[in-house]
Amino acid sequence: MATPDKKRKRDSAAAESTHQIKLVNAEASDLPPIAATTVGVALPPLPFEPYTRPSPYDTTKKKRARPEYLLHGSNPRLDYEGREVPEDSQYHRYYVGIFDPATNSVSLHLAPKVHVTSAIRAHRQRDVEVLAKGSQFTYAESKVALGKAFGTRKAQSALTSREINKVDATDMDQSVSNAIIEQVEENTMNMPTTEELGRSMQDERPVPKHNAAASRVDEVYAREDIISEEEWNSIWVSDWVKNGAVNTKSTHVNKRAMQLIQGSAKGNTRELKMLKYIASLIDFYLFQQKGRGRVPPPSRAKTAFSAGNPTLVESFYNKFTETTSGQVKKDEQGKVRDNGDRYVVSPRLEQKVLYYLAVLCLMVDKFDVDIYDLKHDLNILPKELAQAFKEVGCSIRDIGKSQLATSKMTKAEAAQHKRAVLKIPLEFPPPPRKRTAAGGRR
Image 1 (cartoon, rainbow, N blue to C red):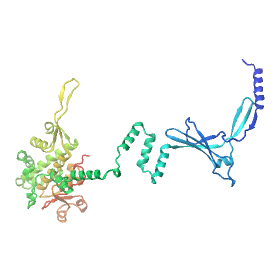
Image 2 (cartoon, rainbow, N blue to C red):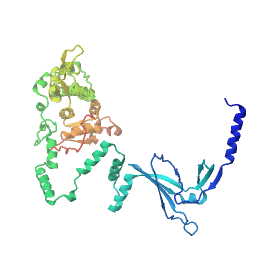
Image 3 (tube, one colour):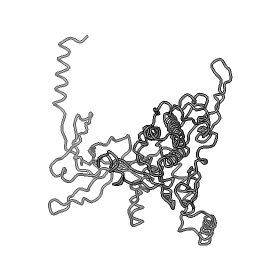
Image 4 (cartoon, one colour):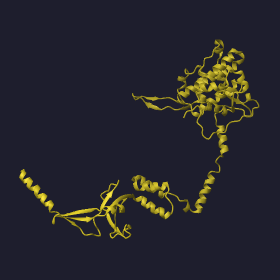
């Protein structure tokens, strides 16, 4: 362990040695040490090459005696370049001291200061190509250049493959171009026109069977084409007439049935049976709407309708559902179980339900229907319900003055009511370019 006396002796010796170091100004050299600075750039461990060139700066109306110094280094992706800053060189001088232990002296060398910046090598190549082309790069070309420089191996391979397989039409032989054009014309010769496609879409709409050449509105649609005889014979309205009350889920049906019951019920049996069918069809529509088109098997659905008519339930499933086979799976015990058939109301069949409802409502209301209550019963937008009536040949109109006079509505209330009127000759709307299914499953 060193004693305090020995420690003081070493400190005094070191101090004496420090005072004996001599500072020497080194002579100017063509390749002096260079002081490099960076801002926002982390320099990797790269070898830098120094360069000199005649200085372009002239601060005293004469060229500076010493040259301008440059540094350059690069890796596969980036170029690093150091240049002198003339403004900084005018007011500051930087020195590098080199200590020589043999002579115990420090030689001071005047060191030019350079500022190092980085640049993407791909961008330099791009600039060269731009100058050669005489135009600017597009966004896609710039993206490809960046992908080649910084992309993964997989991305770079994809870019290379895309360039190899790229076809330049300007380099294509005229005979090849003509052959391609002829082939395209031949393949598109038998393609249907826009008008033909429109007619085809109209023919495929799930609209009930109709007579386009009818001379009267009551001859356009027939009840037998919508409600079969088996369905018709299964509908009974004696409970409505006997009780003098109607209690369905439909306000539209309840209002009209009560008006008919309070009148001559015997003469209105046909309309009452149609209204009971409409009430059951509305129940079915709401039932499938809850499941967004998915419905249980008929055996489980027969208690879901207020009409409680098994014949109608079975008929609705036959008309308005599609069947898909169930999946066979093993349960936890390893037993094979079949989920059975699945029943789905597709958007097209959902439209079919609305079209059948629209036609039956027209028959009950003498082909002039106020659709205000019906849109609430079906829980759909007025625009969707109005479109369903248009698809069966109706035009949508406001409440007329004569109807407003006989009703108890104000003008403000009447403005919310719309009428669907069936007129002849029939006019069906053109097929829309893009429209969601009526009923609104999106």
